[in-house]
Image 1 (spheres, rainbow, N blue to C red):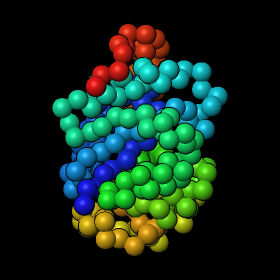
Image 2: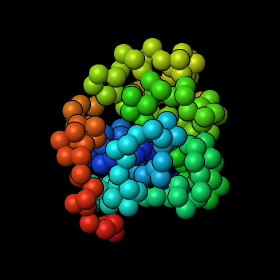
Image 3: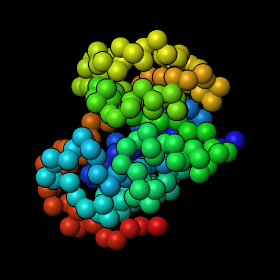
Image 4: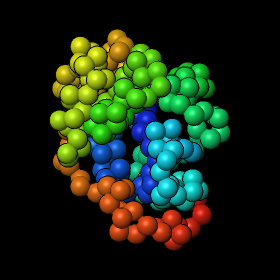
Length: 200
């Protein structure tokens, strides 16, 4: 049975921090591969004025994923899904022989209670939360964690996630990488104008 981790996000742009935490999660969870779901649009970031075009974000993700067991994809566009729960359900129906685990940074856990049907997401797939500098305290105090804490699994059991009864959450901590997409955009707001077409 194939074991896939899913990391959704804007990837605006993708950077070495995305790659580092993904490779560490692949090892910690004994994944065969990770999929980066480059979002066509984040409902929680609709007011953002610095969102690069999807083609540029996908190209940056594919470039950053090269020579690694990481697949950057715009499958949400092709599935016509807007919310994470719908994406997960369609992926599970489309790939019945794959076991999926949702990967998210601690910054996402801090806002997870704002995601549509977030409890239903936790009942569909296990969740692995990756520590991020500056966000861990807020994440652990977040409303969603108040509900998820009772379903938390031990980190040293992370490789057995396919056997967990849902909901299930595991917290992973790796060497932190300070790189952030926000910082990269601040340094180079027009980064996407220098990105070539999608890399296959």
